[in-house]
Image (tube, rainbow, N blue to C red; front, side, top):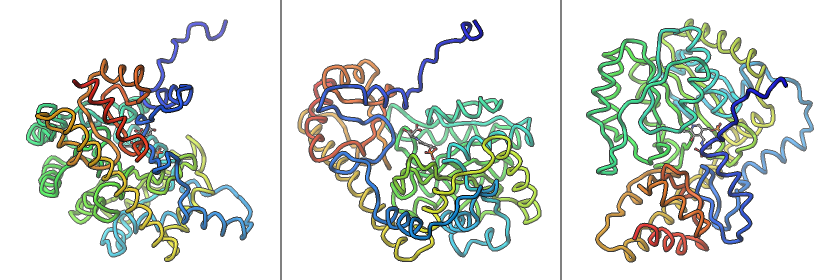
Length: 398
Ligand code: KET
């Protein structure tokens, strides 16, 4: 009996729920649980630009060696331009160390292991609430995790003053995890003025920002959503960025992501890249070659790039249309209640304010799946299910 002492795994609040959805036999079920973009037919799209990149790879019939620990050089260079802008001073100065990682989750974990080893006294502060896996991954790396105030349930907005007050009280070199755009789970983002105020606090308190950008292009646009990244870089700040292509290229299972560290000098960036490579070697040795081929081509080939930007805009606009439809139906059914948050929140998610009991009722009675926190993936709505989903929500809210 080697393993009888194990505690049973309670499951992951998002991934286990998605498994429960798949197992639900009801034909009219609606998946608003996991952060995946579904098209208007309810399918995960294969973008034309991704298919064309894969077709090019098939024709080239190139061998599949191990990539270096830090991943594909061509992909890393494209990621840097995408995040920081081709004319970034930090990029020109060679101050950015970028690695291709196994999804952005792989990047977050490699970054967490690196911090545990090289800034062992630093804790990490995450927004209240945040993506649950942030806490799990940093704690798994042995880093202490603390919350900072963020979402204001009373107004559906941001507790920005309280957030700043907490950040001002942190010891130097504390790590502050920030969602660069499309906050998960709330959909509530900082304004540009608030980002600027944050940069000043980070500088004054010598904090280390760790930006997570998993939904680039789903907020206001591909470049617009990189605002915070470019602001920190232009301010001469040292910081981390983990970025994902899972959602923006609809390549979830390819595990396409990267981790970048902006440093004070090119020499420091070399040191960081070296130790990051060592961290990767100890975790998974090297990232996936197919993911590098897709991302490198889609970003680097002008025609594919143009097609991708149009695809991202179409996904963003379809989500917006679903937000408006949901808002309209709920406003009709429950007049006098304020559903304005569906329109102001950004990205894939809305924090609905539904209680766990209401979420359970939606699932059991109507086959509509939300995360129990009340988080809804708006990208699971489509013209065939949005009306009845809104009616179901109205029923449990009444
Ligand atoms: N960061 C955030 C903020 C995020 O929401 C996700 C995924 C990731 C990182 C991971 O991305 P990837 O590059 O695929 O490793 N979030 C969705 C899926 C999940 O929980 O894994 C979600 O919140 O539903």
